Length: 122
Image 1 (cartoon, helix red, strand yellow):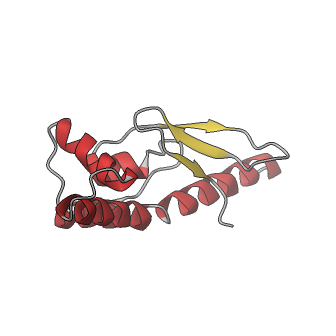
Image 2: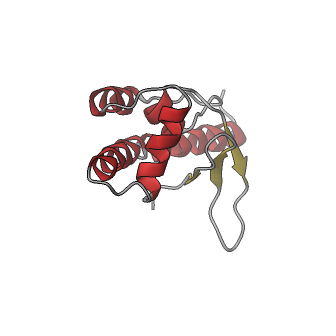
Image 3: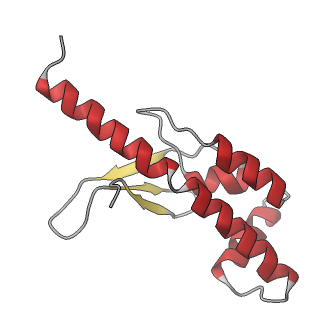
């Protein structure tokens, strides 16, 4: 039997997952922009720096591989991981959640890359 609290928790988990899944294609676009920026001599952009950081860590960054990872991104409830770390590196870095306040919605932050994702579908 589902209690109202359990139903609320499951709907919150579904919202978190839906919001995170929507971020994976955006992270793929970040990879594409970063690769294009580096190829055209604009190494100072944030996207190009993200690509350079990944390359320095020993992971080659290709458009094809990033697209595969973006399509395969599917976090599990209670085991949500960072879309950016997954798309760029193929690493499942856990997200740390901050509760919502009157000024901002609940968000999940990655301690590895510093990315932060709102967990609402606005």
